[in-house]
Structures are given as C-alpha cells and as structure tokens.
Amino acid sequence: MASDEESARGKRHGPDREPEHPADREPDRAADVVRVLGERGEAHVWWWTAPECTDPEDLPLLDTEEFRRALAIPAERDAAAFVRSRAVVRRALGELFGLDPRDLALGRRACPGCADTGHGPPRLVVPGVPLVLSVSRTAGHGLLALGAGASIGVDAEALRPVTDRRFADPDLTPGERRHLRGLPPGPDRDRAYLRIWTRKEAVAKATGLGLSGTALGRLDTRPADRGPVRIATWTVEDLHLVEGVVAALARPEGPAGHGPVHHHAYGDDRT
Image (tube, rainbow, N blue to C red; front, side, top):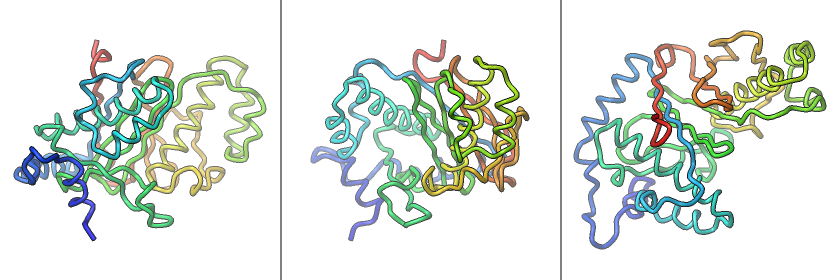
C-alpha cells in the first residue's frame, strides 16, 4: 500500500510533470525553517477574506481530491471559501519555505481517538518536516496557524448576538456561566461568550480529538482573564486579527509554545 507521501505525489502530478517534487530536493531549507521555529517557540498565523466566487487562480493549487470536493459543494460562495482556504494554506507554506506552493502536498494526521486519517488534524505531507497546522473558517473569513511543536489549534467565530439560553450549555463551566451572567446584554457579553467558545475549540483542535472527543465542560477558559491563559496543559491566547471576528490559538505548554505569534494578512486584507 502506498504511503501518504507517495499518494500525495500521485495526486499532485499529471502526466506532463516530473515524478519527483522539487520540495523533496530542497528538504534542508524547510527543515531549517521548522528548526528555527521550534528553537524560538514561535508560531505564524495567516488570515484572509474569502471571495464571493471561486478565483480561477486558486484552482491550480488544489490536488485532485480537493478539486472533487470543491465541485461537490452546491453553494458557490461556500465552494469559493473552501478553494481559497486550500490555496492560501499552500501559498503561506510556500512563502514560509521559499518553495513553489504547487509543489506542496497536504494530508491529515491520524485521529488520536480512533486512528482514522479521514478526519484527523491537517498536516504537511511534502516536504516531510515536523510542522503542525490548524485551519478555521467563519462567515467569509479564514485563519491558518502553524508551528513546530507537537500540536497547535486555532478557532475563529464571527461576532454575533448570543441568547440567554446559551448560558445553560453543558459545555460551559459554572465559572464561565457566572462570568457571562454578570455582564449586561450586548456586544461585550457576546464577545465574552465567543471568547470562551474559541478558546475551548482551539484546545479541542490542538488535541486532535475535535469537539465530539473533548470534554468541553471540564475546560475552564477563565474568560475574565485577557490571557494568555493556561487551560489544562495548553497555553491559549486570543488573536485580534479582523474586526468582528473572535479567535484563539492553543499551543502546548513548554519551549515550543512560549515564543511570539507572527500575524500575516493575505491578499486584500494586507491593506
């Protein structure tokens, strides 16, 4: 049976392309970048706004399976958001490594809970360096986080009104409920609720188990603390990237997660 890397090579190359990735011929460059990230404990975050329609320039960066998935999405806006997210991930990695984004292959890590590679965390297959990735999308915005530690998790939520019935959610701790009920209705309370939720989901993504495999009600996010905060064995910090979007980043405690987070805007968001 072919390995993930061999399968990725097959999906990325047509009959008129050479069978070897240029990225495979320059492993030292990518390895050096990841080594420095790990030594400094740094992470990088990219954010972007999805187009209303699929950008033709994004399509050549998709592999065969991603292209099929895009074709199966009925709503054009949703398809455009999916295509843009895959394209930006490759462009961001290409920029980081100084490689052609078309020569990068993506896959998934095995789910820590069931070992299924169909829904595990995203990973970089080619070049084969120990880089960890996490992606989130919300209301026309996308977010990518990467680092050199054992894992990383990012989540973003569009700011929106939150009803009182949400405060009975079993995924909230008693302390989180008290904090929310002590705030008057309005944008500040809405933001506080979404701060709680994005911190929890960032941790869930970092564990690789996702929402269904994480006991969210046992994760106290300390929403009154602007952070970074410690949640279990994770260091979690809020990301202030786009107006109207609440986001959080989770990294393991220790050397790989103690350094700064570098923010990058993609495309029109650079202005």
